[in-house]
Amino acid sequence: MTYEEYLDEVTTILTELYELDDAAAIKLVVDAQDAEFFVHHDDHPEMCTLEQAKKDAVALFEAKQNKQQTQKKQQQRVREKK
Image (tube, rainbow, N blue to C red; front, side, top):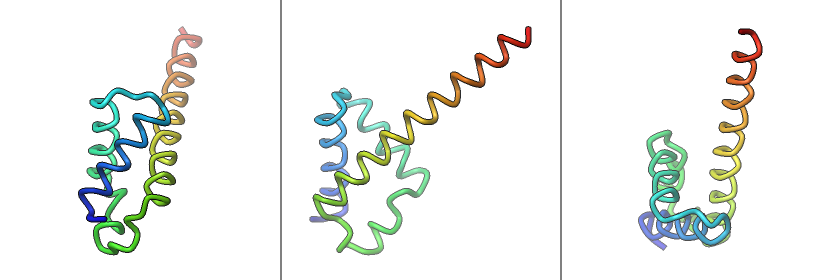
């Protein structure tokens, strides 16, 4: 599959696995692109497989969840210090 098809597949998997709406899934993929998460996929088309798309979708969602949990903990610590 092409790089663009691959990104579409990652987006679709995010909506199916995690019940994200299209806008949230697209934002997650676009943000990952901005952070150069997919650079190797663009350079190596053989990485653009359905199996890899599933792995990347899971990795992106888990990273998002971890970031949100870290932010919540930091906000809680700030409140506790007041």
